[in-house]
Length: 272
Image 1 (cartoon, rainbow, N blue to C red):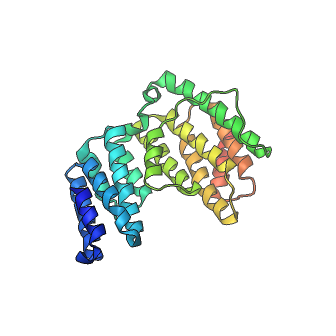
Image 2: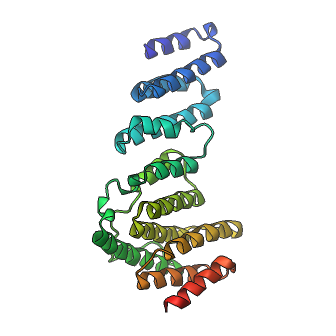
């Protein structure tokens, strides 16, 4: 049916008001998605979107919404009612707000595909492996070297599917990706998986080390990353990892001076 209607619109465009037609298509897509017919909504979108090139931004926006619904429902296997509740704010909320809200109401999504982070002993070992891996990469970056193959093995990281969802939602800039990871680290602490939170913060430091930042971006990165480091330092029992986090952070942001920097320095001195 979609194909037939599309063909008629292409053959007799004068029969249709494009503004009203595009509005009707958008309304149908949203209606299908709200009823849980995501595949039908996607088919409707893909059939008609090429006809409305002047409204491509709107249809691209809707496509991200549908892809996010599909990924959350099928790949993450989340309850449809939960997914619809979260994404009911898609038009007005930022992608980061959606990610934060989803983690707050269903923090166990951080463990999809890596449930071992819930086990205390396994998580402690994985955290140590992540610490060794990211520390090596960060030190190579500070020496001016590119990403290199490390002898340390990075375990499956918590929140991998959350980061895929963030990507689908359009989270792409280095700063926005760090914000998404900050939500994950905070959610991991609230969910009672502190080792997972520490691993995520290590990955934030590594992302920051390899990103190219101008002076303004550096200040934004600094506030976001260092506040995240301080957040996990308060829950860490492993003194070696605590000192490593402090040393890496102080070295990476040696030119930044703020109350956060002072807190980091005090924590490092207390750990020695």
